[in-house]
Figure 1 (tube, rainbow, N blue to C red):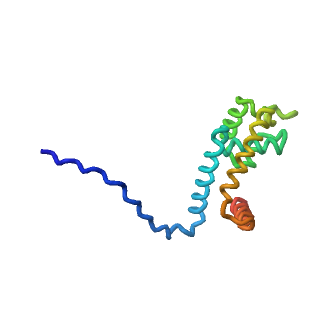
Figure 2: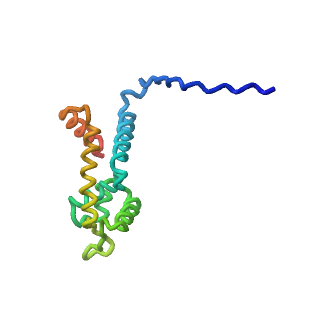
Figure 3: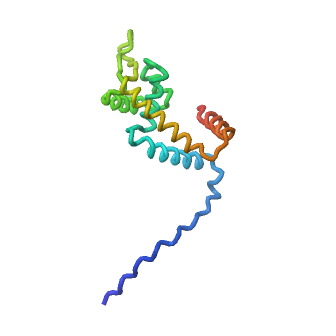
Length: 156
């Protein structure tokens, strides 16, 4: 006769592992911070159809009218082939337009469209909320110090 199966009891709380080997590792802390930032961003911005990459492109197009595609890829540190896919999607949605650069048929310049500006306007509201949530619990001085440290880290 088969043994009766035991009922699964309520899950015991998971043990908190010893993070001391990782606790002061910059890479580990950056990865956790990035996960938190992305989770916060996606919760707020997904209803608008915005990802960090899509928002970054729209912000850059607003600030840099007629930016060359290659310059944008370099500035955002996105592989040109990946940027091409992202731009094609934004263009298909009517959020940007590409044009051949005058005098250089191999280079494209990019402009944000009215539809792109409208989406970006809503995106900026969401972005402000994401930034508020991420900075929650930090003093303005701590926030400024963190931004300075991240700029130093990303310099290369």
